[in-house]
Structure formats: C-alpha cells, structure tokens
View 1: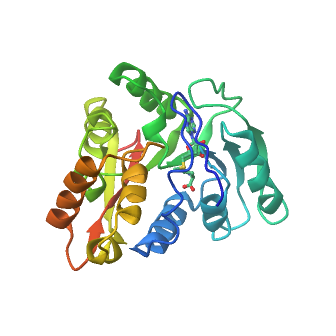
View 2: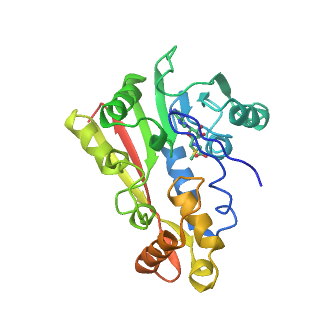
View 3: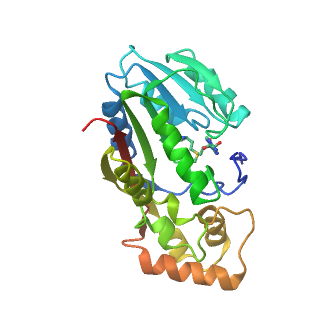
Length: 256
Ligand SMILES: C[S@@+](CC[C@H](N)C(=O)[O-])C[C@H]1O[C@@H](n2cnc3c(N)ncnc32)[C@H](O)[C@@H]1O
C-alpha cells in the first residue's frame, strides 16, 4: 500500500490506506467543472498544495490552452510524480517545493486555487489568518482565490470523537474573515458521500479502526472503547449507510 506523507507543520502517513477502497459517491466532477468554470478566462494561475497533481490534471485538462499554471507543493516526491504526467499535456510554468507560509511569489496571479490543504497550514488562528491574507495578496486586483474545504456540518467533523482540526479550518471561519475584510465572497456547496455500510455490518473492528485513523488524522489505532464511541457516532450520522462529508468551494475576489 502506498504511503501518503503530508508535509507542513503536521506530518502523517498511512492513514489514507483504506480510503481509496471505500466507495465515494461525491460530486467530484461537478466540483472539477465548477473550478474550471471559475478559472476560465484567467491566464496566470497557481495550484497551492497540488500533491501528486491528479486533481490539478483533472482541472487543467478541461481549461482551454491559453493559461499558464504554477505549482506549489511542499512534498518534493509528490510534486516530482505529478510533473511526469502534467508537463507533457498541460501548460505548467514554475514549480515550487515550498509550504504556502515560506513561498515568496515572484508574480501576481489571476487566480489562486487550493484544494483541501488548509488543515495543514497553521496550528493557531493567527497563523491561519496570515495564510488567508497571503492568498489575497498573491492575486491581481481583478483576480480571485478559490478554496475547497469542509464546512462545519461535514460528517467528517461530526463523527470525530475528539477535535483534531481547530474551528478556524471550517469554511464559515474563512468566509467570515474575507467578508469582514470587505471582499466579495461566494460559496458553492457540494455533496461528498462516503459508504460506511461495510463498517456498520461487520462484526470485526479492523475497518472501523482504519477509518478512525483517517478521520482523526493519526497513525495510531484507537482502543476498543474509543472505537466503539466512534462507531456510535457513525451510526448516529449515517443516512442509508452513507456519511456526507460535504464540500464548500469558497470564491473570493476584491471586486463587487
Ligand atoms: C489532502 S492533500 C490534497 C492534494 C491536492 N490538492 C488534491 O486535491 O489532490 C493536501 C496537500 O497539501 C499539502 N500541504 C501540506 N501542508 C501545506 C502547506 N503548509 N502549504 C501548502 N501545501 C501544503 C500536502 O503536501 C498535500 O499535498
């Protein structure tokens, strides 16, 4: 099984091991198409935290050729893997092996987008807000910032038995922050359903405990007591054997 390493101030591995065999019924391609729609007409773009570049490719493959996209990713191996299939077919310009915090932009962008990376930016609210403001500083006066992240109502957060991601990671915090600054903020809500019928029907604990590790962003397997608490939460929030993680696409610009 592939080891997944996520960089930044937090580092973890292995917790994604059972996620890709779990059935997801998400609006994923609706999200991709919406991001493409939002990026259409913008020339100079950057993907912040592109990982191995699979999402990047899904997006850029659907944009017309008149763009150039920079990539920023702190994990050099992930970026190297992505470059192999992105360079032949997509208009990739500069690649930076950096965290957003340490990135020193060399130009202003028409559009900055970042997909499920905010959880790893900062430990405290002050540091997090600095990242939000930095994204806005990176765009031209008529540019836009796109952030895809989970809302507070996400079952991902609902089923946790301990709070792992501070509240400032929730989409509403970011929306409020940008609105307070007087920016124009739009939000598009998507579904992201994950099948848990296998966990609910098995008499064993392996799947449950693996899923616990993914949800709580930890390599450590829970005790049986914590696993049972976790199972109770899954039972409470599941509908038709599915959890709904939901996804918010936050679109921020300066112009009204
Ligand atoms: C859940 S993955 C998402 C990857 C990609 N955006 C996608 O949608 O497939 C989170 C990514 O954020 C990156 N990351 C972690 N900390 C970061 C930071 N401080 N600044 C920028 N990216 C970061 C990780 O290396 C990882 O590639």
